[in-house]
Image 1 (spheres, rainbow, N blue to C red):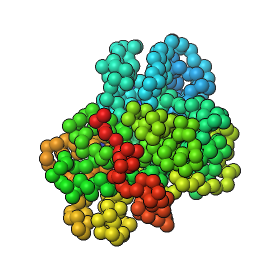
Image 2: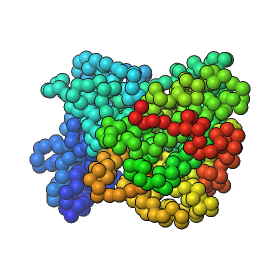
Image 3: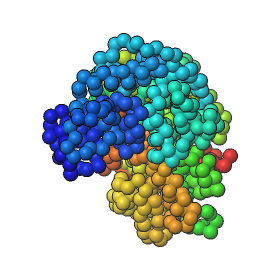
Image 4: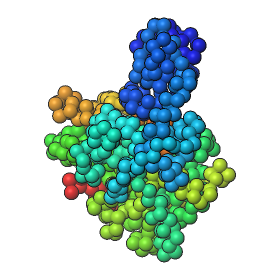
Length: 571
Ligand code: HC0
Ligand code: SF4
């Protein structure tokens, strides 16, 4: 431990800590822009400058270590002036057209300019010109980039991908797609983690709300919306509502106010996925010699893109089951349309997802099995849904609670946990156990796959089938480590759940953005709570799923299921 003084407060702090860490631990705020704890401590923005007495030096707090006897001023005249000058220099290369920026009101640069009382800008140079590509879900506007390098670090260290890199030199130094490529020609998984870690509007997810508004205004079109599991525990954050007020029922009510004809639940399709994927696992498990191992879940499109580009020789190991989002679209434009006597070409399916990669998934040429049109017409992120509510002047807190519509609006506890890491595996094992034994396991029998380390493993015994070795992993850098271990033969699994985003979809790239806060675990905990409180906790007990099989699909892995609910990932 060393003894230091910050703003006249004497502190004992661990040796090796940075000044910023010491100040934060003591509740002394120091502004910063580029800093991400343990990820980006490179002092690029120079906002955290502080003065060290007796040295006559200003130093960046985020990467200067404390020294015994150090006396630090966080708000001296020199510090104030340096921060203002540095911020003005950043602003001189930034498109500050805040009124038409999607991050207005939630921009770290805007907030800091406001907090530092910057109301005029003496240095004005042209911001870098933007080349905006709307073919892909992740959009970069160069004119808003402040070269903080957060996206570079998150993509490299958390997602193991190196899609972003530093480009140019001197005053023209910037961040761009590595090797001067266009994003669509890279292996980007479109997970959107760079977007949720960007402090400004330089990285965003393509806004598709106008496509939805056009469909809502067309009297010939029946609009159907599905809401993903993880959306329900995050959508209300941007309205400042606690989870109780920002409930599922209020979200449904708000979607009805927007004008959707049917408000359905992706949880229904998650239960359906379990029926198909659980059956597929048992088919593979009982005919081991016919298949390459392990079997991987296929519901995360970020992961599927990752596998196909980084480890293409394992593509056969992906479950052929489509993701719940895509199963939902296929069922809505076949079973549901037929039930209601609707022309499937006039049914418009919208997904609300916590995810940017889901936009790319819905646009795959293979995802059009119900009637030849895309099974899902438009994917909106949680943030886009919130913007729809705002632009329609909907105040969710003032609404009563409403229920999802029937018959694609029911979901079990096993479905809602899809949005948290480990949830797909837990749900699949509950039903696989039932399919083999004819009896339900304890709903918490597989809790070893929940939470905790980002890569975890467990072995369970299913009577009549034997030992099943499973693993759960999230965050693509961890996924790469697991794949390398699988490839080297140092681990041996039967079934692996993979989610691209750390913590699973709860921490997805389409979720509300909070500066310097990682909320995947707390949102995930809410999903696990919803499961624990559910009346039905097994996908195979969802009565609407049972009716779907009885009246339409007949059996998991049957002919209709094969056509509507499965895909060839190599196509
Ligand atoms: Fe997910 Fe899903 S759990 S990937 O994160 O499997 O996006 O929430 O909708 O499709 O259900 C995302 C979330 C989903 C799908 C489901 C799966
Ligand atoms: Fe999308 Fe979820 Fe995969 Fe992230 S983990 S890319 S949010 S599906």
